[in-house]
Image (cartoon, rainbow, N blue to C red; front, top):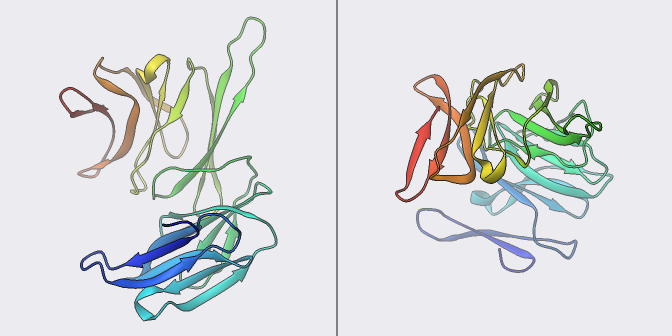
Length: 230
């Protein structure tokens, strides 16, 4: 990306494939994905979300007009998320442009990796004798809510990235320097484990994924570089 233009190039050869130019005066908003092995770039053009084929002279695949300002677009599983300034989130089919609205509203949505979940976070203020609680709610790419939980964890709080496999848990770092982590069930939000991380943990550098079919969470260590799973 240079200024308001994004240049698409072949990853193997560097050959130019096409260009996307923003028309709202800022940097381009775009997401790169594939459809049955065919590269697709989805971007925002003149108030519409447009899918183009970079290996076919940037021919359009579909276009969907949007009656609001678009905040962000991203890849979520086999769909594209389109977040609007009004707080709505839509999941768009890459093949057809058909959209499904998430059954909820948020000031800001958070994509948990390129998988099957998006999340929102907010704080539930505590009383005089009760601490603030961290509320996490997640949705699937079908727009259906998955879970909502309020956790009594010491701030600051940070959700870690999540692998794309459906069974991957949700992991959260919390406390001073992100030295503790909680592992949540991806379907219910139940806390599966709470761990204290080693002193060498990179602050907040936690993640969740699947390894050999089993759900795991982990953290990145430094000096020397390493990974610990839990």
